Length: 218
Image 1 (cartoon, rainbow, N blue to C red):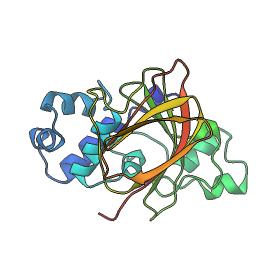
Image 2 (cartoon, helix red, strand yellow):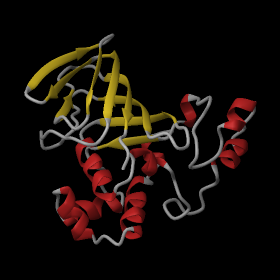
Image 3 (cartoon, rainbow, N blue to C red):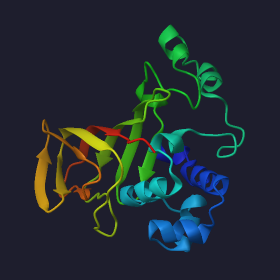
Image 4 (cartoon, rainbow, N blue to C red):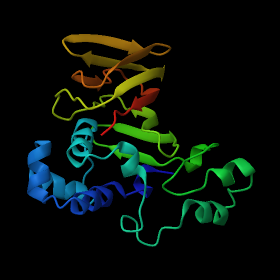
């Protein structure tokens, strides 16, 4: 599934904002960006950076997983995951059938073509690898293209929870507080996400890794 096939992020953000009675300017003020940028994100004219997306989820008090859950309002005419999978001839095993409940879980078996994909600003792609209901964990395959960065402005981000990452290939420059280091393939990292941090791919090859972001209680 290509990132362009899932243009639901903006409508989901708008849905959650309106549900909370927050104005466009109010959300922009809380996130620290312009109202025009929020409008462009909500209308799918642009995608947020990693840092901006986390700032939006903090301001709306929602999780990344909440935004991955496509609602009927966010994607008009969308089929529940189970029906869509059946129409594609994909729900052929018990494992896939068990994992086909939209907005509740993703898994237990998730094949590459069935992962929700989110292409963010600054050359970063997230793929949701799995989801269990009532568990605040983001289980992601992350890809930083050459030159990709978690913030288009070069700033650091912080958010509730903790992060655990394992790099499969490539290299990432990681800034954690006042320290900067290079995370290479086969190496891992874990830290409290409230520590200011950022990621950047200074190499010529994509940096690909598996990340768990464990969110704190809201």
